Amino acid sequence: MTTHTHQTAPTQYVEANGIRFAYRRFGKAGPPPLVFNMHFTGTMDHWDPAVTDGFAKDREVVLFNNAGISSTSGEVPTSIEKMAANAAVFIKALRLAEVDVLGFSLGGLVAQELALAEPKLVRRPVLVGTGPRSGEGMASLTPEAQRIFGATYENPDDLWLGLFFTPSANSQAAGREYLRRFRLRTKNRDPEVNGGVASAQIEALGKWGAPRKRPYDYLKAICQPTLVVNGGNDVIIYSVNSFILQQHLPNAQLILYPDANHGSQYQYPELFVRHVSIFLS
Amino acid sequence: MTTHTHQTAPTQYVEANGIRFAYRRFGKAGPPPLVFNMHFTGTMDHWDPAVTDGFAKDREVVLFNNAGISSTSGEVPTSIEKMAANAAVFIKALRLAEVDVLGFSLGGLVAQELALAEPKLVRRPVLVGTGPRSGEGMASLTPEAQRIFGATYENPDDLWLGLFFTPSANSQAAGREYLRRFRLRTKNRDPEVNGGVASAQIEALGKWGAPRKRPYDYLKAICQPTLVVNGGNDVIIYSVNSFILQQHLPNAQLILYPDANHGSQYQYPELFVRHVSIFLS
Image (cartoon, rainbow over all chains, first blue to last red; front, side):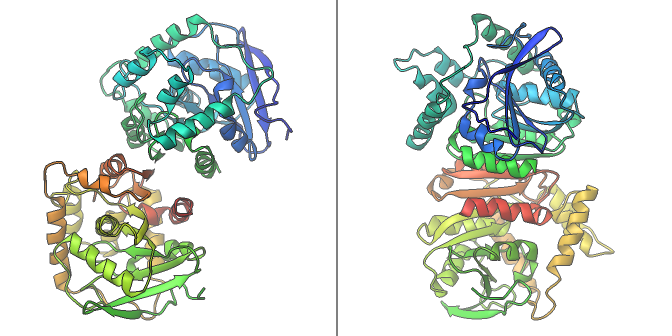
């Protein structure tokens, strides 16, 4: 057990396969550590301390930047499968034999491929705000995402508030609380990602989302108990994709939260931690 | 607080609007009581003591037979709305000013109409194994339900095991445990329903399920925080109907359980009680 928290955990490094991975590790040792996989263009600093510290009370939390992201060296691959392979390299470099894996959005795609490729390493995946290969509206950005990413904002926070939260007063207020929390760490923050990250990730997302025959068949091979979580009003990766994941995974529980968009876990952090903790324990 | 349990709670009676309602009430006083609404042709004795006693640790549980069912007098109405009106009469006859309402299958339809008609009386509905007006496959019995109800069984338990549980070994084993539990009460059990009950309930189900224009609009008027729960493999009221409820209710959380059919709450009684208790508190 360390006394570190989301705010104080030092950024550490581990090298494997020629990549120097940056990571932070904190929380109570015992159960399999929970390894967090981040969304499009995000770094370790975009996680919500209400979520990470919430889990850290009962288990070790491992945040990391995958290859080519921020303080981690290497190139961002142009496929989700290769991102998952890099995540596996990282986890094994920490000499962890079994982990739980939480993935949000793009990180949820990585978590699926990781669970598929490494059934012994990944005990229980938690798939948040994400969808299956060739999911509904996933061949390209949804119209709503195009509008949100394409707009110009006087207040840059409005991009996050539109991406992760619904227009309701309650959701927007929760969003502002999230923005406040994820900026609480002031020392040794990660550098923002460089310009090449987005284009490689977009290429990977495009391959993942492209239509194909019997796209959901691969889910039958993810046999671990899996928890799928999303907001009921996700306009970035439509909520129906969470339902599709639950329907096609052999052993999945689904939780959808009310009046919540892509970032439901940041809107209801205590409830989310409670639900996921019940699932993991 | 009473010391009674599912097994020992006496059947009591209260009269209102010319109907003598049979009910049982037990559990810890404090929060709004949780009033259970039963499925097609079921009585108070079909509830699972692992569920009812599970809730009774923290709140009062009220089981009752609606009009015309088993030990309750009167006629079974041929519409869900009238069943809900009778349920409201019963709750008010107990002089309860605010309750939480759990409805399973047909009881979930009643719970919706009750929440709609009595927004002050019903604090939080819990809709289990149920669906909206004109839901998918709800215009008549699903093909699977026709097959299950139409078959002849050497062991009558196989009807319940097919209706409420999936064919998997795990689900069937959980089903046998449920059958064992719901028969544990040996004294003062309810009489089975008479022959007229099924036909009146089928008529009500038919009206509810019939196609209509904009069938889900009424859900916008159920403004209470609502929890929707089902198995991911419900073949009696298809699981997609739970997703539809969540999508159209203004403030609903959805939980779908893995490898579970219509009776998911009896397959995972402890988890179900835990999830619902979090939602209610």
